[in-house]
Image (cartoon, rainbow, N blue to C red):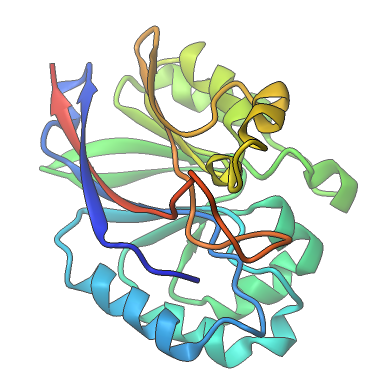
Length: 239
């Protein structure tokens, strides 16, 4: 895991309740036995030294069985105000074990809730990964869709960009995801675009802002080319 500096990005939002809200967005850490404790501690310290309202992690924290990296994962419990949804790797390697270790996280797979910001109730929903069905986990799509449609100041978290339709077809103001690694190694960017609607970065569709995080870790080969890792502080601005 090569840690980049935290970058800042302004996102235009069509809801004044979210104005000036700051969201620290992480994704795809892919922690495994080769990940050093030092890197994880540095990540935690960098995040905790950043001013934000909530921290979101859009899937794939782990890339091996939890029991092999318990001590590494426990370091993440020092992070604050974390809302997390699963990725396909988390499901494969053991989402239940991960939930036991990360007891300071808010796991929001298939959950809907409200968070306070400037004395306003902000609607937050999370969808489990699209691979959930292979692990006998039902995605509560109808519940999440209804919740997002009933609340005009809502934020949706999901692992894959493919779930953007749940945002643009409801009242969702912001959809955050990861999974793509930004292609990780050029020219594989083109292959990713064949199966995902967005590769990386910021997009606007209807009333929704969509942000696809390139992630921190790597998959398969510990190498990136023309797809730098990222930690991004998203500043929401009412326009």
